[in-house]
Image: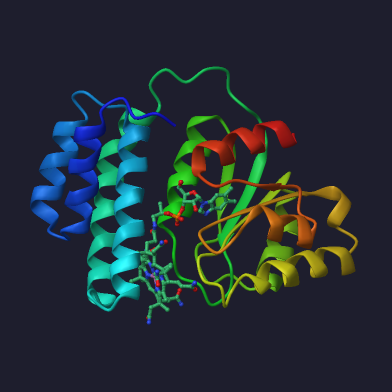
Length: 213
Ligand code: B12
């Protein structure tokens, strides 16, 4: 997507990369004056990808990942009240959402949940490190229309397969739409496991959920 304000976006991105909470908060608050909150989130996400790259190159360590995560989460709290502006007709439907077992990344999940709520969905958030049994048990209790799973680690994507297999075993697969996302997931993987939807970011994820119902 073309950026409305590439210079400011770069500043926001850099603020995340610098992993210094105070200036990052000021820059994001300042960006709000001229940028759409969703665009700010996308710029921060680009910063997070760069933090991940620096971690891979051993320039950064887990501490930096943690601080960057905290900064991003705090800034999302600042942006949340502005997300609802300009929203059109409300969607109806219940979504069960969680990050798969052995994975504790939740920033992307939380962004998508905020956007889903703005769009009018009811969301049941199972949190992180959610085993297949918990997804199935809660699905039976809540009769959710959509099951959404997030996975950021290549070592945890197979958990998605386990959940889909469990759904089939329990005879529930036809009763629920399944959508997946997160940095470890691809369109090809989604096809391979036979889920109903995949999205590269939360905005597209919300659109997919609307289309699935
Ligand atoms: C912050 C971070 C952390 C934080 C997480 C804090 C938190 N509360 O989430 C902490 C410090 C805890 C962490 C820990 C670890 N991390 Co980490 N982490 C990251 C980092 C830098 C950013 C992730 C992030 O929040 N991005 C911003 C959000 C907004 O993006 P997102 O999650 O991708 O979500 C967007 C989309 O994917 C989509 N989306 C997400 N979920 C869903 C779901 C659905 C249904 C849909 C449709 C869409 C969707 O919408 C979102 C918004 O647009 C990434 C780097 C990266 N490139 O992702 C590494 C990264 C994911 N981590 C990595 C690693 C290795 C680890 C550790 C193993 C490190 C360690 N040695 O301990 C641990 C694992 C802990 C565990 N068991 O889960 C690797 C994974 C490598 C791999 N291929 O498996 C990465 C890629 C870094 C790297 N390049 O090496 N990490």
